[in-house]
Image (tube, rainbow over all chains, first blue to last red; front, side, top):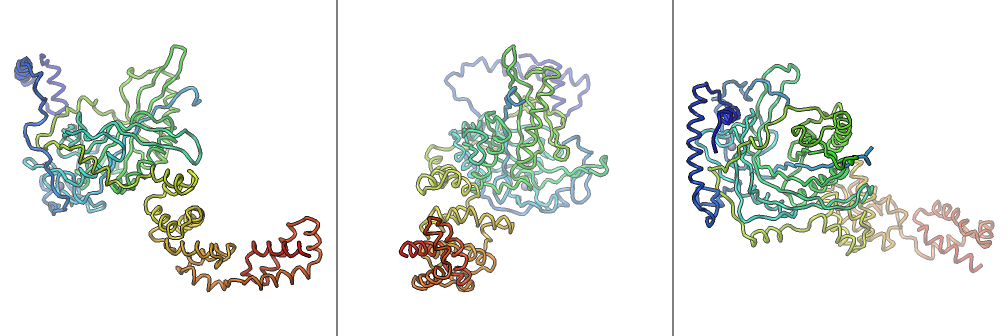
Length: 96
Length: 490
Ligand SMILES: [Zn+2]
């Protein structure tokens, strides 16, 4: 499967990344190489292998439903570009 | 107009599960706290933080899935659903994509009351566990000011329950929602408070039309922002008519226009177009590497099923099959919720008369709860006290004609039936006194005696009135019988 420049533009838009023309060219190249490598892996016969859905062998890891202290609000808001001491402030959100 | 098209409806319900802490961190889920006081690095998506699943949330989700008759696969995992919105600090929602924790369930609905549709089974495609987003507070007055974001709700456990497009009218949609809410409350997995957003519903609606060129479907519209069951009904009715109008104007079919999202505006009673979201393939789902899968065995699922207790549907059939209540009455009782039903059963089992208890509860108790805008938990007359009232009436200690007075007094003054009988001055009139009163009245009313002898039994009615004036404790039924017996002997 070849990766086109249009694919990269679309993925960049979905990830809210603004890419220059040069970046688009080089990323199209790099992504194509990665996908080509995956295509190469896909040639291996895996009929007898269970699909793996996770890289870790662990399962059923749970925590008890017990409330612990949250962050003080000043700390939670500290990294926000804009806040009013109570809430994060963002530019008006389009029709919700 | 409705016979020219069929309305096809599928519902997506989001239910907040009743946990103390969030799905992947231990922040409180308590509603109504000061904005941004219930967040931590995990739920506001700080780099390096790691989610760990809340055991109770998973158990409540599993309990619900079993109660809605879903199959529970042995393996389930969580995925990242990626999109950008200010109330989603991680930049993705942790949801379930291709291997949800449950699928292929159903819920049965009926309309005992008005008979607008036949009882039917509504398929449930899947129910999966995911985290909630935060809340945006828009400045409605100024419009252009910044929006405020409160992330307290971010990470609250949600179960998304997706129905098949099996619903055919707004009445069916409402019945489905009411039955689902009842079930969720019965099994205690959510408080289902729509005002606080614990229960939210989106509807997918389109029309199937029969035309000269065969069957045609209109483009599917997803309706959001419906904040009550009534709003769901109104929005679906409005949307069906709107789609029919648009179809007549444009002839546009499914596939010829992208799926549209419209918001319900309760004030104007219309659905309005919303900015269309990215298509579902653009969410770029992939397995969340920070969370591990959950495995469950058929034995574990069987255990959950066994612990469910009685669900509304089986409770209805038990009430009519085993206790002789009409399906209508059984429905009224069960639909009031678990607390009222417990009250009913306590009374009915104590006085050992299900039918009479049903009459009292459905006619009088429910009426007073409504008048006083209160709940059965706060009701003045306890289940045992109502049972005493029913028993006293059956024994004749309390004449049937006065039982309602006694009940009203018990409600108003929070007293038991013995006290009410006492305060109302009710004394059982013994048979000999009743006979004497009867003889006295017959002697002074020869015209009535003559009428009765001529076959007009209803003439006795005016004697009952006179008797009650002389002694309010007279049991009118017994008095009537006595009068007729005595006249017959004359
Ligand atoms: Zn948190």
